[in-house]
Length: 200
Image (cartoon, rainbow, N blue to C red; front, side, top):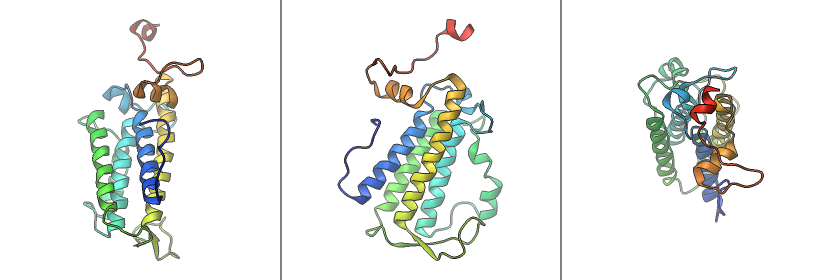
């Protein structure tokens, strides 16, 4: 995916394009990492790049469940108890598997949205968490999409900080490497550190 979404023909296409770009930017923070590095928590928080990718998959599925007004696989209590686990890449989980699951979650969202002819269709506000407003009866499908973009963009920023703390790699260097952009005077694609420089 290039550094910016392509032109869009309408609102739905635009929302999906920007949602896809934010997912890709978050996944891009994992470019070139090993499973061990994807589990690393080198910044002031306990966030890891792999854990953030895992979390947005769970978060996106929960919002699709809300949008479709269906009960998720876990109860509210189970989801609350597992909340921290959603941010951790477990010892039996791989970065490749987590990215594949994230791509599957994205496909599920696109499939669910195909069932809504009207992005203004109401989505009742759940009442099972203290952060949901009590004075709002419903959002819309459009609102849910905008919220997903916001949430994933915020976590993409977290992932950028964690990745830079691992090896100094930054977003555009990683994009340039992943997309095969040519080196310029002001942007050099990321390359894995050599053994000699790692030992130094």
